[in-house]
Length: 118
Image (cartoon, rainbow, N blue to C red; front, side, top):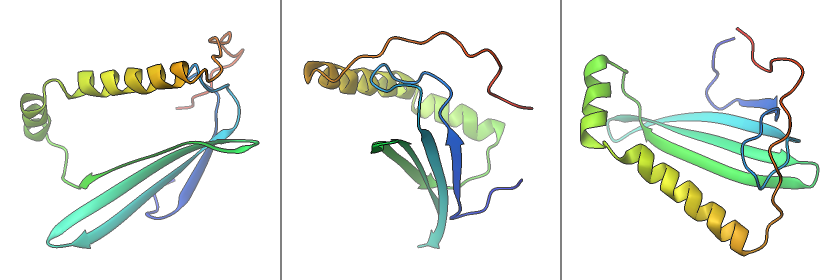
């Protein structure tokens, strides 16, 4: 099935992602695209909800460009520490949650069946 801009896609949560969230609920994905000021832009939203409502709401946006080997190399050269910065910010947010005494959930045993498909 091909991606439809603006459509909402849903998936059940089956992986342990954060020690501050249980493996329950689901994800909502939404890909939005706009053209303006000579640039083709996109916004990706990923939200995690459980039975009580929203837990995590995230988004990232940027200018759409075709992925080429040259662009991938240039991104690595321009931002060599970007991944480390993301990891540092994730751990900073986790520290703040821990400091607020948000309940901590240990990693559960793996599921009996694979959750992905080819």
